[in-house]
Image 1 (cartoon, rainbow, N blue to C red):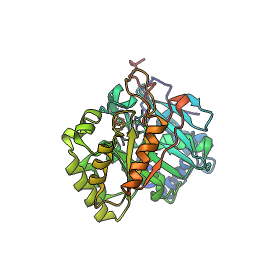
Image 2: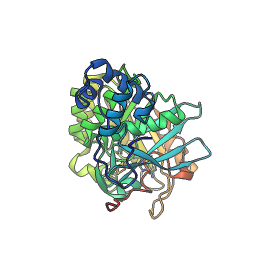
Image 3: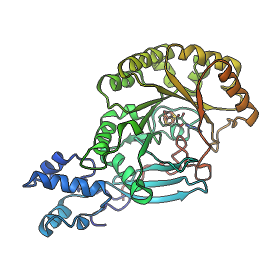
Image 4: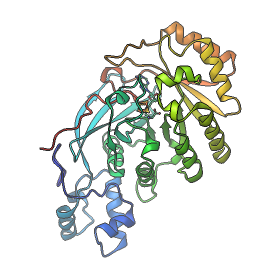
Length: 353
Ligand code: SAH
Ligand code: SF4
C-alpha cells in the first residue's frame, strides 16, 4: 500500500474513495475525463494503491501517489466468529476507529453492515455504541472504505445495511454520497434496493428521504410503541414523539409505496408484555410494515436481560394473533460482539501522535 496513513497519524493527503468519477477528474486536475472513470473503477474493484492501476501512465501514477491517498482508512483489528460473522475495525486518519461487519445468513447470503458515525449521539440505553457516546460524523470516503475492505476480502457482496455505529439520518449527506458511489454504474453498480438504511426514528430525516431519496429500503428501530416504555430506552422519543414518527412513516409510505421494516430489540421483561403488542398493533395501523424481531444481545455492564426462549415464543404468538407480520434476526456474531447494534468495543479518541 502506498501513501496509506498510519493509524493515529493524520495525513495531509486527500483520499479519492469518496469521490465520483467527474470529481476525481477535477480534484486530480486530470487532462482527460476517461481517466477519472479509470481510477474510479480501480478503486471500486478494490485497488488500494495507485501502483496497482496499471492502465494509467507511470507518470500519472506517481503524480497521484504524491498528492492523494486511495482510501482514507487502514485496516486494524479483525475478529471472526464461528457463524461467519467478521468484524473489522478501520483506523481513520485522525486516530478514531470505526467498525464494520460481514454478516452471513443461513442461506450463505453476505451483507456488509456499515457505520455512519464514530459512536452515536442518540444514547439508546441498551446499545453499546449509544453508551460510548459520539465522536464525529464519518466522511463519505470512510463509509465507502468499509464496504471496499469487506468486499475485497469476502466479496462480491451485494447487500448493505446501515446498522453499524451511528445514526445515518444525522449524517445523510455523507451517506447519500457513499450510496451514490457504491451504486454508480462505472463502479460497483450495487442495487439501491439491496441497501437498507436503519434509523432510530428521526422524523425530519425520514421526510427528507421520502422527498429526496435515495430510494433505498427503510428500517426504523421502533423497539416499543408505548411512549412510557420507549422513552427511557430511546431518549430520541422525547424530541421525535411516536405520533409524529407515525405520521412521517405514513408520508414515506405514500411517497415511495415501499414496505417499511420496523425493528424491535426484545429485552427480557422490558418490552415483551401483551400491552407492548397492543401498542405495536395500534402504531402500525394503516402502515405496510414487516416487523424484524431482534433478541437483545448482552452488553457487558448493562443490567438488562436477554429474552428467554419462552418469552420470545409468547411474544411471537401474540403478534400472530394480532395479524402482525414479523421475521426474526438470528443471533449472530455474539462471540465477537460483532452483530450490528453492539459495536464500539474499540471506540476511542486517540490523542494525536
Ligand atoms: N442507529 C441506527 C442504526 C444502527 S443500530 C438505528 O438505531 O436504527 C442497528 C440496530 O441494532 C438497531 O435496530 C438497534 O436497536 C439494534 N441494537 C442496538 N443494541 C443492540 C443489542 N445490544 N442487541 C441487539 N440489537 C441491538
Ligand atoms: Fe445510536 Fe442506533 Fe445505538 Fe440508538 S441503537 S444508540 S440510534 S446506534
